[in-house]
Image 1 (cartoon, rainbow, N blue to C red):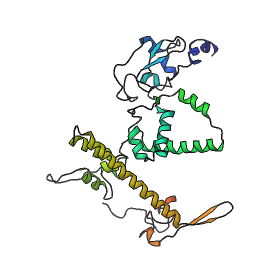
Image 2: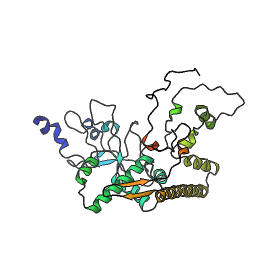
Image 3: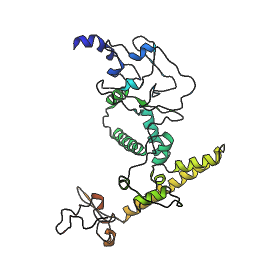
Image 4: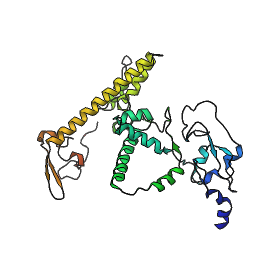
Length: 327
């Protein structure tokens, strides 16, 4: 062990700043593999980041330069490639995925808290998935609350971990951190279906959704950002007219803001209608309900206890558990 620490392992005592320092990036003698190829530079501007499944350099650092500075020799070396992002040499199928930089997380929190933008809008602007945007905002809110309360944060640990991981920086235009418009898999679409239709029928996404389920929306309405499809159509119909696309984007943002305001008003109305009783330890909340809200079978979402889950009927006495007909 000491022989390795004084030999090839000596390269890990002073890791390269702004670069991952995984074992797979070094040869058995402790030499950085990508440094043997010599320095490389980029020409022009960077249009985006490549995914970890592609070959070549990854632009995950700050700025358009793909060079790191070697602390030991002071010589420029190329940015790490996808082969350098393998932390476990015996598991080459796993590659380390980039995380959000601290500047990008602060920008997400600022746009939501200071500018009042919605999670959907910030996700579209910064190319970060909506669930991640919401998680960053909640964690940043807790972090600021802890700072106000004087609690100690694990800032040195966070900086040390972030220094060892590839990061997506805050740039303009923003680099895509991940796909933001993936279609969620609905349970009704997991079965194989043969649906005969006449040749004269126009079978589109709406028809495909209704074939799986009567209540299923079309694919272009179930994606996280359906407004991107409409903006693409407007941009295609009015090529060269950026003002029209910009106006339509503003209209969609206003519509999203109106929906968010309506949700906040409905939530405030529910809070006002609830009767609250404060005790020394708890707060009891009583809300008016209707028996008809549970539906005919008592299992509708509007019924009492629906938010906590309704137990299935398969263990209840008197229930028929074998199929009675073949469809």
